[in-house]
Amino acid sequence: MVFVFQGMLEDKMTIQGVCEKGAIAFFLLMTAGLIPWSLALTGNIEIALAVMSIGFLLNGIFYIVLLLSWFIPSIHSLFSNPIFVLGYAISQGFLLGGSTYFIDAVYPGIAIQAFLITGMIFGSMLAVYRLGIINVNENFRIALYSAVFAVMMVYLLTFILGIFGVGIPYIHGSGLIGIGFSLLCIGLGAMMLASDFDYIERGVENGAPKNLEWRAVFGLLVTLIWIYVEVLRLLIKLNNRR
Figure 1: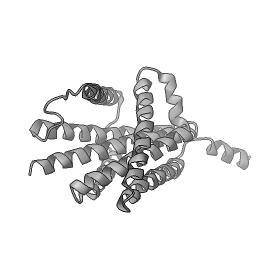
Figure 2: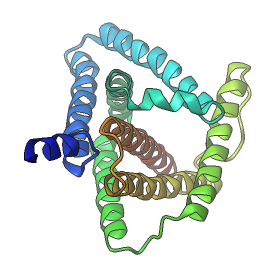
Figure 3: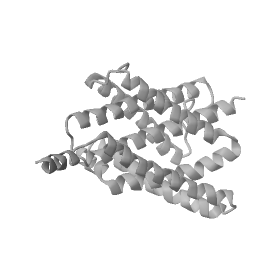
Figure 4: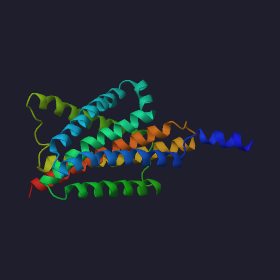
């Protein structure tokens, strides 16, 4: 009887399961990120750029899937697939590792600053959530997801217009509007962390299937990477104002 009960528990989502899978995903992310960084550092710039290009192409596919998931709910099942989640982590590592190296070469020290700030945001939001300061209810999620979707549309429009050599003024510049836009994105990313924490907590409390641990990890990956990129952009803008 005890073994049956333990088996039932093992089929359910747990905090430990999310942490273990999260550790695997973030280890692959960091390891993949070190590959182009190390290649560029040792003078193999062309190979580093090739690895970055692979990451860029793979990320394009992943982001198309993410965008389509807003309109096709059935795609959400992919987010519980470990191959999809770990593939996303590796592709992001390839792209971010290389691009961060070249950005840091122009703005020395900016990479470690972005990394530390992202870590502080994660720790702060976890503390805020655990203290119950933020109430993640249905209205909160609707407002947050609507705002995030609007920002994603702005970035999609920026990409499409960029193909034709047209840029959206102000928001990507180093002026006050551009800095304000970056702060808005970082704030939305922080709120998304609260939503991710709530998803994990509700999943554990409601006995969600164990495969949803991967979906929880994927959500954290997407959010933390977004925050890191936006922090990096903000720091670049601030450096350009000096």
